Image (cartoon, rainbow, N blue to C red; front, side, top):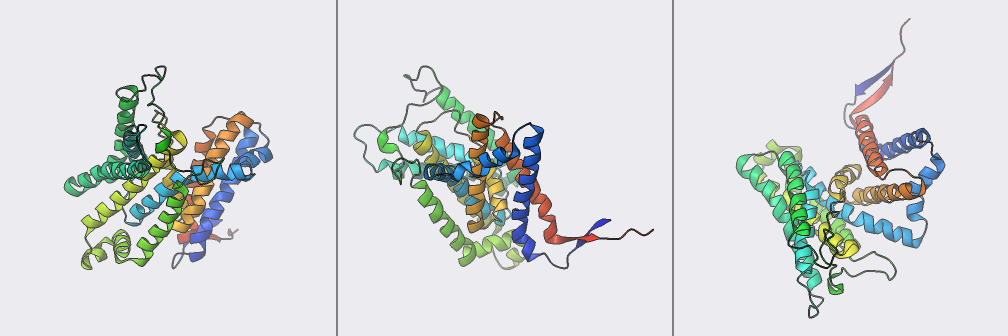
Length: 354
């Protein structure tokens, strides 16, 4: 007989080992899934875990996918550690892309390279504005930030659709719902010739260092985390819950907006209805698999980007639907939730009495 027995204190070992166990469980279930679908499981695992890193170009594409996930997840980690549940990073990503795209559309032949920082700043401000709506409603009316931030995602999608089907639609685009392709001067500078990796990767890595310093080496970061872990103790210590709320949501919104700006002025190069790629939702999984720690999030972002690329390759190489990406993401999340049980409980085998 198997019984879960509460541990006297949480296990430090399983706090770090449970994501690895969750990945192994995901792989095992994935193999079973490939077999059930009549596909070669070895080839399936190769598509997901080897093809994305098999050469320099593939690694570059992996970095391209990982960059927005990493940036958004860093902002969400600040939110979640503050006990503020921002589920609407996807909406902030979209609004950041819209505001950045609006600035990019202003460029002409006389525009100089200064427009790139302006585009990125516009994306940051757009994301902050959209997250600020959630913060305002939570602060003034005690609205649930989970519901508000999530519902704002769908509002952001409609704003994007209105613009690309309406006033920003390219008149020379054969009636396709998209803006004109942004001028070359607006494109985010690339780091390597022949690769799509751009300076967004450097910004993401700088964000990792910045998030680590803020959370673990500053008074404000300490106040954010105390407020999340023990609200009563935070109030007793004089920490402002309102300040923590605004810092958490604005930081998260800024990160998501920056990711949106980097995406539309980088790999996409224009606004289309397909800007929402699910990065804002996937970044929630990235943040938790990375244990809400900036360094851990780097590795989980790489893993999640492998799932994205693997899903695309599975569609072309194995004839599987692209939704297989979401299946693997969901498997990883639920496996992690199950494995996290081992942090607070130990498995005990009890001999059944005859």
